[in-house]
Image (cartoon, rainbow over all chains, first blue to last red):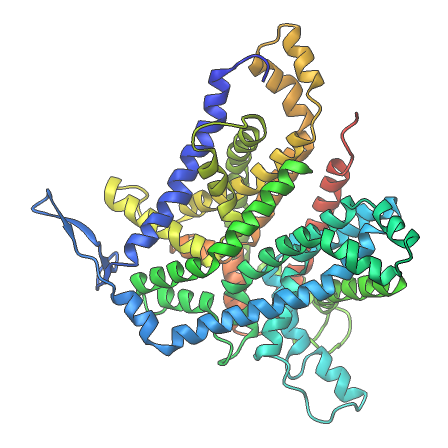
Length: 297
Length: 262
């Protein structure tokens, strides 16, 4: 501001700052604390790891028991590895499908770009839960695809399409594809096309020009899209719950079950902390990309 | 070029086929969601008579409207702070906290807020148990993050000349903000509010962690009914949802996609 306005500045910074400290930072610290708590019967179902004996002597009653359980029981490790694998494959498939889509939109005539982009964003606005539910009707044993395949005589037995790795992967790609397309589109649309002309003048084939110019220039978009798909996919709960089966355990569902079914809050917290540790690098990358996007657009 | 266009069309088919199938089978006379047995609006009637869904819808709309409004105020302030005040103490932490709810897996956000409310209750006696209020606070927090990013990017592409002219003419900074800045970023505010509203209306995970016995939201009802199997009533509900959201989004985007005049 040209004229200093200390009051406005204080409100604009102070109000959201206070809110975010209370509802983002403090909750995170509490999760960290409770992951060291001992689980107990009662409300709340844990013994706080920081306590005061006789009301004033600070006391540490923490335990590493929840982490020991996570490390010791192969169920947790398997769920973590499953989640990483599912998310990585979903990320790659989103990139393979999303890159050509983003490219086609970015190179479409200008008046078409916004409507085409709108078509990518629109499903993101309609209920995620309902879109995942739609796949149940399509994939189940007497669902649309199997009915079609049986009717045309391509198969004689219904294919197992639901409650397996295939359906979970499909759900992840379907749900997170827009997160890949949007940052890719942003970098491809900003690209200086005269670079491609220069490459062509120097005798490069379109494919070589793509590899040497377009692809390297779109790397920031690829990184942002990859992080935006990977992070929520790792922690996903709804998709493995509705489309998955007994072999598709993911860590988000483990956390949910620890909390709601087992009522073991310390273990749920430890699972959350362990998930965050795995995701720190992609989370920082995604935050950086979001900031860049907001500051430059 | 033609190959990528083919992929683009196939991509749209992939994105829209499930939604189209939901809508088509919401008008199916049969209870079997995937076998066509003639046109019928029966499921819309049953949906209307379903008290659990109607009650949950009312709660969801109340939660979403309150959370979006709180998010609008907080997010506008946060977006303004990020775009206009390039340096202040703790800006890095502020940035990290604003973007954290956008990128954090939902199960972690949900669990951490619940543990906060439980801790607050034992420290200061509030909130007493969980319910609509705790869901609103949770949704307002992630809504704030979305509004902040949208407002910040709008302000980054914003022509300051009008504000400076008003200041030169002697208007107070607050008046400049209310009379010049706010109207110029109004489209971003509308988009931000709508986004916060729909995200709240759609959220299952964070709401489930922070809900109490009398605050079952619409996604929670849908989820428990879907877990029991496919139900044509949910198709009817989905159709209403898709149509309403499409109208809202297309209207809002025709407002916001207009580039600011230079």
